[in-house]
Amino acid sequence: MSKDEINLGDWQRILIGDAPGEFLLEVFIRTTLIYVALLVIMRLLGKRMNGQLTNLELAVMLTMGAIVSPAMQLPDRGLLSGALALVCAWTFLRGTNFIGFKSSKAEKIIQGTETVLVKDGIIQLDEMAKNRLSHQQIFAALRSENVYNLGKVKRLYLEAYGMFSIYQDEAEKPGLSVLPPSDKDVQSIHQHPDEKLLACTNCGNIVSGKPKPTNCPICQANDWADAVL
Image (cartoon, helix red, strand yellow):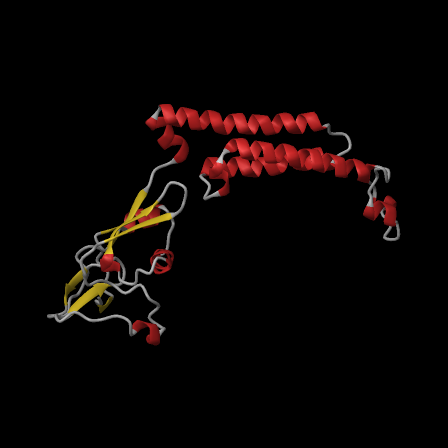
């Protein structure tokens, strides 16, 4: 469309476009049929599509958005091409899931694997850097599960589909507080161990506070906070 054809007072073009007015009824029919087809495909894809998505499932979901839009709105596109593309997306997801089921090696390539971010109260800084995570993201994940002391964390996994899984140590252990240091009121829920202990604010390593340490033996940082229970 050339700029000479653009007229701000041309309400038919703005509201309807170049297609005739009858095409609005066709859009309604197209949308209804594609919506029904999409519901069927989503049902066939299974319950996982309603939960947390893997990278593969997310890719299929984004592909579906590109599939259904032209079939609903473009007058020169037929419905069968959109329906066929939906079936192809379903076949692709089911096929790759079947390959992953048959081969654990293929499953790791397609879906990825879990990553240990915290091990026995110590943040695995190399893994955190590989996954481009910050300390605050890890602390927020722990706080969301009512874990306020890093020493209580036996394992913190970043699952292949992007969620955190937290396994706590049953024993009370001193560790780095994951509560915001600026919120003094909420910090009062912590107790302090009888012995003076310090926690590295970078990795969570616990050392004796007497004498005062210099660099952390694990991460070489020199920033300490009181260990809490």
